[in-house]
Image 1 (cartoon, helix red, strand yellow):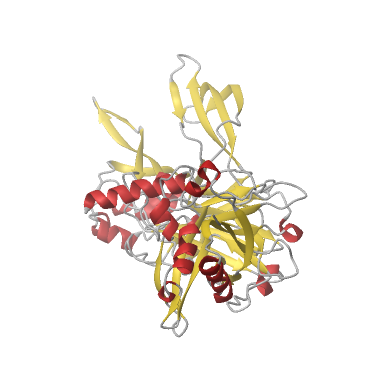
Image 2 (cartoon, helix red, strand yellow):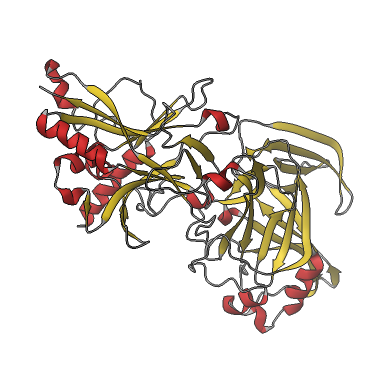
Length: 524
C-alpha cells in the first residue's frame, strides 16, 4: 500500500510541476487516443461544445493559519476589477532558551525585527561609504550596502509605511484552524515603523584599522527597530519570573506581533514566516580582573515553526467589477469569470447534460472515439488587458455536488491526473499567449478521461441521486509533500498566499471566446 501511494505521488508530481507548457493550437490527441493516429488510421476533428462557467464566491475568506502559510503576504493593492486587497501578518514569538540569564544590570540597547521578502537576486546595486563611523565606540570604518528589489504584484512605485504592533489576544496553537478574516486585538501604540520603498539590502561594516567585521547581514531583509522599553519591561525585567520559565507561560505573557502597512494601495509582496528574525541587543556588567565592562550581547527570539502564523486579509470591493460580477449562476453561467487568490473568487465549470447527450450520440451512432478533450477559457481582453502578471499556477479539481445540500460530497484530482499523469507530454493545463496583444491568452485544462467516463460510461458517471459533477479552478499551485517526492494531496495548495488574479470570459453566448469544451474525436 505504501509503495502504491508513493508511486502515485511521484506520478502526480510529474503532472503538476511540469504543467505549464506551450504547444500549437491545432487539434491534438493526448495519451488516451494517440494510438488512433498511428499509420494514418484516423483524422482528428475538433469541435467546441457549450459548458456552464460560473463564479464561486468564497466570501473573501480562506484558511490562513500556520498549516497553510508556506509564504506570508504583506501590502495592499487596489484596481478596478477586484477592488482593494490588503494583507497583514500576525505571529507568535517564543524564547530561544527558557529561564534565560541576562546577567547583572542588563539594559536593552535596541531590538530589531527582520523580514526577508522574496527578491530579484539578479538585480543588484552596490554603494560604499569609505568614511563611515561605526556609532558604538565611534570607530572609523567602511560600510558596503548591496540593494535588491523585492518581488512585487501591483503598482511597483509605492512607498509603504510598515507598522509593528503588540498582539493582545492569545493566538492559540500553531495547528489551530484560523481564517483570514479573523480579528485579533492589538495594542494601538506602534512598537516600530519603517518607511519601505520596495528594496532590501545587506550591510557589511568593516573596521578601517584591521579590516575586521563590525557588523554584517548576509541575507537581504527589512530591518524594523522596535521599542526597546517594552522588551526591557517584558523580557529583561522578568528574569527569573514565571513568565519566562516555559513556552506555555511565555506565549500568554507576550502574545505576539502584528505586521501591517498603513497604505491601502500599492503592491503585495511575499516573505517566509519561518525566516523572520527578532534580535534583542543588550549590555550587562562583566567583571574581569577587578574591572567592570559592559559588552554588547544579542538574544534571538524564535519566530519560526511551532508558532502560530496567521495571514489577515481585508477586502473592499466597493465600485469594482467583481462586486456585481460574482453572482455564481450555476444554471446558465456567468458572462465574466473572476479568479483571485487569498480567499477571492474561484471558477466553476459544469458540463451540461445537453453536451453530454450530444457526445453520447456521436459516440453511439457515429462510432466516434474521443481522443482528446479540454476546457478552454480565455482571459477577458476588454477588462484585463494590463501589465499585471497573468497567473501561471492554477489548481484544477473535480467535484461532486448534491443539489439538495450545500456541501461538496467528494473532491480530488481529476480522473485524467490519476490515470494519465506520467504519460509523455501530459499536463493538467497548458497556457497560450497570456501576454499577447491584441489577442487574449487562454488556458486549456485537460479533461479527456473525465469526458470519456461521462460519455462512454453509465448514467451514474454523470448524475444520480440528484448529484452533478463540475470542475473547480483556483489561483495557486498544488504543494509537494514533506520529502518533496510528490504532492501532499488535492487539498494542499498555495491558494492562501497566491497574489495573482485574472478575469476570464465565461458563458457569454455573444462572445466567440466564451468558455467551452473542445473535443477531438476520430472515426475509422
